Image (cartoon, rainbow, N blue to C red; front, side, top):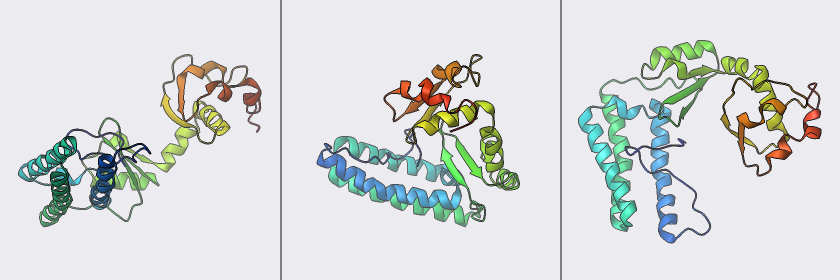
Length: 227
């Protein structure tokens, strides 16, 4: 599921908080149906690709309908929300039919892949092998080549000494999630504890006490690659 949405994309699905009002709970529960329609389209055609395969007139109608949905949510209009949501779900079917009628080629389902909408709105694709990456590059001209990766390539990146140090840090707290990685000239693997040289270059979420991650006694276990 994409992490960022632009004005031309339908509202994101979020789990309501325990204190959410009845309107928010209703809206989010219904948006799951719309997200399911989008996921189905993405699996068949590729992440966010279907809207690019139809003509501009249909694309305009799709985005206009999406605008109605946003407006209905903002105004808390129950009837208009139900109507506009149903219209959006039907719209995915219309897009699919037009792309099919125009002879557009669906994404190759024979190649297992993960497609992810990045925060800049572009799509990243991860496949298993370099051969599969080349096939995707040939079939999906709308994708930027530098956003198509194979697991073979990712393995090489993860083997980099700096990334190995990040992996060791992450291993200290299994629930930690790397949210920022900005290596500078001072980012160097090693140091007295193995981590001292780049504490400020990493940002983890789901961890309120970062000092624990970089505690010398904890880190010393990984200094020589031991655990």
